[in-house]
Length: 292
Image (cartoon, rainbow, N blue to C red; front, side):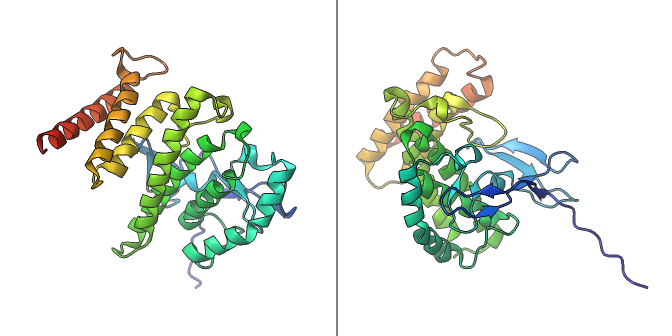
């Protein structure tokens, strides 16, 4: 009697209509997550505003973030779906010329990797790495710095997931994760500057995340910029640089809970998270001052 083979539950599907890459003109079928059927079991939101998902007994571990970036499997051009086909002629030329660089980077960090395969954690992390590289060549009208800020923190999360998955203290993914946290710090603080100067149109940013299910908006950007300051500078040996970074972030944080009242744009959860972070930074500054 033949043993019954259990059918693997599908978590994604391919779009019926092909997507054409504006850079190399090849066609591919974008992969999308199925919705419904209890595939995603939402868990808590971390202090980094990341939504966690519980393991599903039927479908296994699902990483929604891995499916957000559209990647051409031939030239590795990558972008969020709404920006994928909006390249200007000069951007097409630049991104075409840099295709070999993108392939070399993928080979260096991942070895053999193929974006025609179904997305997994490795492909998800790689997709954000490619997106940051490609958005760095895009025009300011599409708010590339906003997209890179969100992509960098998502890359940091997924590379950290890869590090934990390997359960190897010598895994390079932990160091790569920290690299992207530092990139996210730079991008988010640049975004705050651009929100003041208008160097990039904030309305073009669209969903500001940082995760896919909730848009924390401007207050979320202020909070994440400060949180990343702690992540990057808490152990910095340069005391003056550390103090200056903390003081600047505290001023930004005070904009969130200055009135002490919650509203639609300032939910009570965000105010509480911000207040806790503000107090943490104040305590650190006091400790450093006492140690002089």
